[in-house]
Amino acid sequence: MTQRHGSNRNRILIIGGTGSIGRLVTARLAELGHRPRVLTRDPDRARRSLPVAVEVRAGKLADPTAVRAAVHGVDAIVMTHGAPYGFGNYAAVDYGAVPAVLDALGGHRVPVVLMSSIGVTAAGGPSRDVLDWKRSGERLLRASGMPYTIVRPGWFDDGSDTFQRVDLSQGDLREYGPVRRDHVAETIVQALLTESARGRTVEVFSADGPALTDWPSAFRAAEPDRPGDLDGVRDRPGPPLAAEPEGVRADLRRFAPTLPDTEI
Image (cartoon, rainbow, N blue to C red; front, side, top):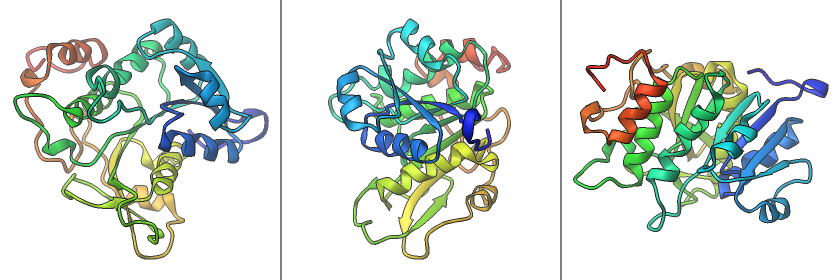
């Protein structure tokens, strides 16, 4: 998707548009002349916190009819959703939003930018936590064949107020790294509007140095994910598909028919 203006402005759906990053993404897209649409459980709250030009649609991710209506006619989708840490149903939200959107699209291909998190490749254990579910969502999106970019933010706001430079990394090798929320939002917006971001998984941090202005070159410098691979190009090996929950494997069978049945 390329940036367009005037009567051909892009209609962009933001899932999680009332969250701290989603609000920034939505406002930035509106500022650039695009037409953001937000799906939310609380439309009154959304209208109070978002620019007037933003289209607000009431609905829940668990309601297929609402999600289908929200994706209808969009040129692209941004996913900045997330359940409250320590209290949320991560399977239904952090993971479940991905199959809900894929199902609603019904095979229609549009660029999708998914916000995940650093640390997802270090997750794993006897009980699944939020990072495990986020990684499963990443894997499903890669396998779906959608033109995607996956953005993994570092630690929000931690010591990053004075940092001006956006630092893109790969491989999920840093256990710690601060990032400004506006840097996360700008990376998501630029990933959506930049062709060289397609098919890539990047971590985003904030650092000392001049502000990043050449986004196409920054994304081209990142190595693309390998076609057919469930994990990011430089990631440590992911768990075997047999270790994924049955619901995830069922979604892979639905949305990634090119995967060998023996693997799922």
